[in-house]
Length: 326
Image (cartoon, rainbow, N blue to C red; front, side, top):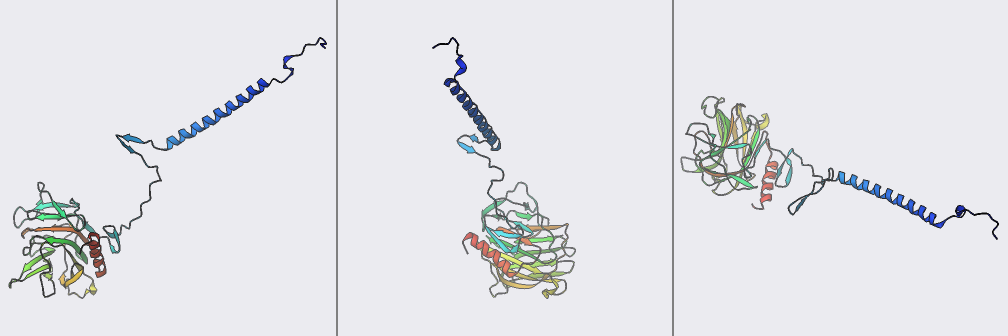
C-alpha cells in the first residue's frame, strides 16, 4: 500500500553503474601497461644500432663488448704461417715480400763503381715463394732493405734463396757501410759464389771485410763437394756470428757458422765489423761493383744476436711444414 512517500531512484545500487566502473578501471590499467611496453621498446631500439640495407646485403654493426675475443699473440716470438715458435725470438728486421716491398725499394746502378739508386720507373716482380709471394730479380735491378742497423757484434741472418743463374762474386745479400772506401773505412758482409783457379765452383761463401782492422775472412762449405747450391731450387741460408769473448776467435775476429737448410756446412773465423751506424746499406742482388743476376728471395730475417742450432732448425722446420714440401 502506498503510504504517500516517494522513493528516490538512487536508493538501490544500479548494476549498470558497477559494470561501467569496472570497465573504466580495466581501460586505465591496459593503457598504463601499453605505455610502459612502448617505453621499453624505444629504449631498446636506442641501444641497438639499426641495420643498414645496401642492395640485397644487410650490414649490421656488432654491439660493443660482444665481439669474439681474439687470442693474444706473443709479439716477442717468431711466427711462421700459423705456428708460433716459442723458442725463437722475433727478428729485429724482417722482409717477407708478399706481393709488395715493405720497408724496401727497387734500386739500379747507373754504372759500375757507383752506389745503387732508387729507380722510380722500375717495378718489382714477384713469384711463388716459400710462404706467400717471393721477390724476383730479373737481372736488371736489385732491392735495398731499409732500416737495417749496423751489425758490429753477434748477429744472425737467414733467408730463402733460389737462383736462376750464379755469377762469381755477385752478392746474394750485402750489408755494410762506406762500401766504396776500399782500404779506408769500408766494412761489410756478403754472401756469394766464387770459382777457384782449378775451375771448382764454391757456393755459398760468406765474406767479411773490415778495412779498419785490415781483416778479410770467409766461411765456405767444409764438405768435399763445395757446390752446395743448384739452380732453380729453394735453399734456406743462415749465418750465425758469435762475437763473444768465449767464441775462441782471434783478436779482431769472431766465429762464423754457415748453415744450409738448417745443417751446418762450414765454420771459420770472420772479421769483426766496424759499420758506421749512419751509413749502413743493405742490398739484395746488387752492389757497387759486381754483376747483377737472376734470383728469388723470400723471408729475409736479421737478428742482432746469435741464434742456436735448435732455433735455426725450428725456423726451417716451420717453413717446410707450412708449405707441405721438403
